[in-house]
Image (cartoon, rainbow, N blue to C red; front, side, top):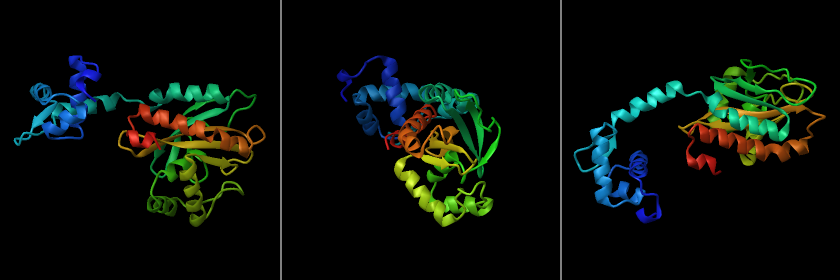
Length: 257
């Protein structure tokens, strides 16, 4: 996009160059990515270098400077995924009225980090801090589906595939087939696989590195949510997970699948 077609404040231009610096080294490519003249791009890069946000590489190109890493480290120390996700989770709760969970990946299991109780006269048997198996839950299966099959095999070999209910998937071959369907749809359904009488719909959440780190789900009693209804709500849960991923800085290509 040409410089004339974009906002032209000095701050805008500096931010465009800083963003392009994350992917390009040469002055020509940075200028092309930002749509700015080479002279303007060079001037901004020199200023960024003076403040430690860029490093000249001695061949006419630039690398990200140490100040970027310093700021990133400080920001990550203050970054709270649950706080970032809260407005999006609240929106899903308002839209469905069902219990909404946000769970984070912790080794070979997931841990509930947030729970918004549904607008029903009963409560789900879950609590913040509770661990759950990945192969039995909608959130967990959504996370597994975001991993390569060899990683899934490693996790299930370590944890086993114990059945919590008669509906739990308990063989690796069946689980891998099921995860292929989850990947195709973009969401997972727990059809009484973790708790008898409870049906859930979940989708995976990704962080700024593009790795799966968490999941979002809605849960309620089976008589409140048929399988047809669960599949109809799946895209809404997947959209919510994408919005949470966006707040965590997930790469654009993961948000447009």
